[in-house]
Length: 226
Image (tube, rainbow, N blue to C red):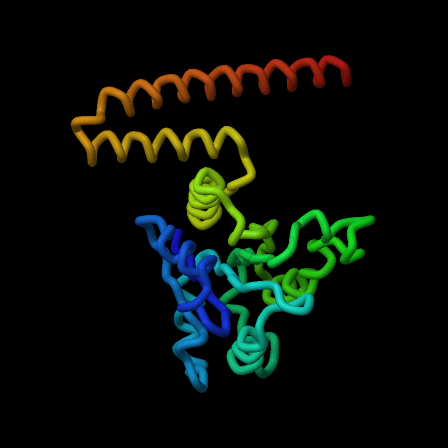
């Protein structure tokens, strides 16, 4: 699956969040497309990039309840015209990676911003619906500047899973992804292979136990229905 990351930021070079995410890109079919490096957008070139991708990510900081203007400019210049012109792009995925300068707790019912992020990002879901794209739950990053090293490493994993997994919210699938990464690590670092393999085996066992528990719960629920 090829992923196109459409990055909208007024000054990526000076953004610690964007630089961290760029350095965290997985070794997979991922294209980083920086809109700020463009002047007038070449519509055919942009459409070609979109056509080659299975998953499109809009990645941007949240300014005044929206994305930086350059993303809207890109949308206007690339998707001007009749809706029917873009049927060849139908069936793709759209997801958002949004960085916040405030705590995520502010964006919920009763929070100081009064509105949940799902409400404020609704225009992008409507955009996806209009094009026949499947809209996925966004990855929200808040207060990156105050993150500890442990939190940054956790974000790195979440980001890579978000870009490459079919369902990054599935716990068992997350475990399978980690096992696969550990196997790659063992191959790349033979001197650490024994330790990495031990961790991988323990994780695999835990995943099997988790799947068995899920199966048992499903059987109990089925019995209640019967």
